[in-house]
Length: 255
Ligand code: GLP
Image (cartoon, rainbow, N blue to C red):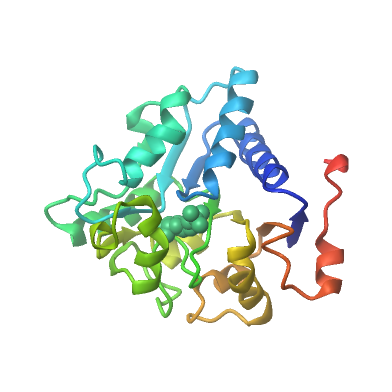
C-alpha cells in the first residue's frame, strides 16, 4: 500500500504514530530500526509521543539494520552513535534491550550469523522501519543481493559511499564495508514501514513502483510482503503516475 503525504512533517508524524501504536498494542514488540536523514524527524516525533504518554518501554526490544565495519560505537558516524544520539538517549530504554551489529567485531562472519540468530530468538521482528538508498538498497543490501540473504558483510557500492559522504568530512573516510541485516531477516518482519522523502528519492521510488520485485532493486522486494506500507511525501512520489498519486494521497486532516 502506498500513502502519500504533503510534507516530511506529516510523513514523520504518521510513521512515528504507527511505531507508537505498535508499542502500545504489544509492549514486548521487537522493532527493526533504521538510520539516515529520513529517520531523524521520525525519531523526534516518536520521542515526543513516548514522552507525552509516559510510555513504559521496559519490555521493548530493538534491532538495527546495519553498521559500518571499522567504526566503534564512539565514532560520531557509526550507526550505534546515531541511534543513541537521535533516539535511545532520549527514551527510557536500556542498552540490554537494543541491538546493533558490531562493526568492530574480531570475527565479522560470526557476528553476522549471531545477529540473524538473535533476531530469531527474540521471536522475529514485529515491525521493520526502512529507508532507501539512491540505488534501492535497504539496510546495506546493495543491488543484486539475494532475497534470501541472512545478515552479512557487504562491500559498499561507490554510489552508496558517495551518497553517505555528506555525513563525513571526505569521501575516503566513508567505510568501504558494512554489516547488514539480510534481505531474509528484513522480509520476515511481520510488518514493514518503508519511508522515502524528498525529490532525490523520486527516481528510486518510481523504479520500485514500475518493476516487479527484482534483486536488481532490493527495495522492490517489499512489494511481495503481505503487510508493507510505503510512506512518501509528495516530492518522493512526484514521478509516480498521476492516477497512482491521486489514489495514494492522504488527507492528513483525516488522520
Ligand atoms: C544508509 C542506510 C540505509 C538508509 C539510507 C538512506 O545507507 N544504511 O538504511 O535507508 O542510508 O539514508 P537517508 O535517509 O539519509 O537518505
